[in-house]
View (spheres, rainbow, N blue to C red):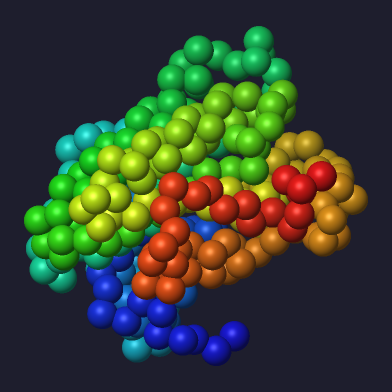
Length: 256
């Protein structure tokens, strides 16, 4: 697909950038002209993605970051402004999974772990990012990764779905809170996407991918790049009148 310079001149932080949707987004944002800072827990994964970007002529910097740690999140945002002098936008994609199963089969410690990364971590990131956007660029855009599993009851991934539904609420609240400052906040809700998380689920529960294909109106799982393109548009000036929206990228599943 030909690139359109959607993000030329913008500095964008991507969390969860070591693999999957985050890595695809970092590569795409750089190809669309952005300076990108890649944040995740794995330094080796970040280095590999950053090398891909620089080899293609893009600008990338890395910041090891644990979304469950407030200081670590603040340090990743600071690394962005220190390196590039500003923050125009962020793609808060970092997340952790849970073992599939019913509510009463999940250990409370697992619930707390999912909460710390998938909901509290997103809140911490947005707060730090708004502060940095306000202090540098003055206006900008934030996109949060939710999940199609947050929009309906989720008996297989109940904690994951609950935290992502909380992200939807934070997205809407932040959109209303910061609209007057010119800071837009939106989300993407991926459906079944061919990421490591989905493939790990297939490995533990064979048949998941076949079920996905059978239930999805478009007849297939999506790719990380397809979600990345939706996020790029929401971060770009082409979506300048869009805020408070969580966009389903799910092959039509939510329309069923």
